Length: 334
Ligand code: GLV
Ligand code: MG
Image (tube, rainbow, N blue to C red; front, top):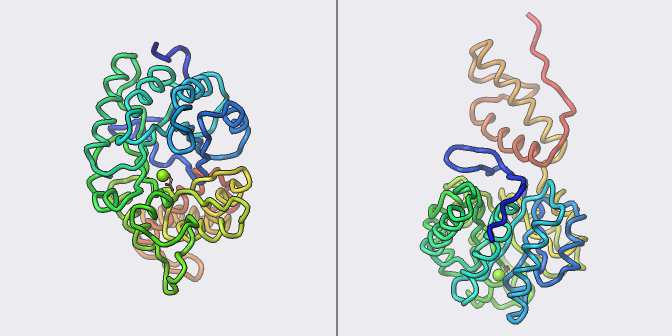
């Protein structure tokens, strides 16, 4: 059974890929595939991405049924405006290949990406790319449209992160998985995302976050921060989200509706920064082309080519988040 009929195809072509590097992913909601109630409820929530889970939130004996729930939810549900992702099981299990085949044959046209957890090396991403290509060909789906999100959640995955990031043109994001990662390196804490007790200087996650971010940016991917498990501690969520947002991460998982607003807010530029970024782009465009000057004053600040690049980043995030523009550039009168 190939799930094609009358399916909306999302995304537009960018280069070799149906692309989407700038899909907004400020808030990525985890939804257990074993729960038809949560699959239904998730459709009303204001998140940028939903990922329907077949992995750790689904018990081994519920995995088969969860595949069917997910196919039905993708085909029949209203996910408009959201990036639709399914997380399959990792490649050390016996479930991965059937997860991919059943979900993509059943609802491939209603799906934007598959998330592969616990990625350890580039070969695992290449395996998924090849399998997707075969299913897309068999089902008459456009080859290459379904993207891949790779979770980095072990020491081995981090050591190989550059090769993983380069492993397939389908890759859209690298996703930090703090819970599995902390277990993998024997970090001495049980509170996911918080500093390990006894570590009093600096941030125990700084290296990991930066390493993932560097690989993501080097290969044009988005970088996504993983879950914060203390769902009642919104201040804690905000604090931890602000940390990765400040470095440049594009979004963070949300495990509960109460975390959504914080994620959307923390990973959007402020209105003032967005307006300023658009102003810099317009002003720089005017001065470099009409007046042929490379460095000019905009208010009290000198702007040049580097300012344009920084402004592009903020403007792209603001546009992806749907922020309105509240100021306009007026060229000087002669
Ligand atoms: C997510 O998958 C995590 O392990 O934190
Ligand atoms: Mg994990």
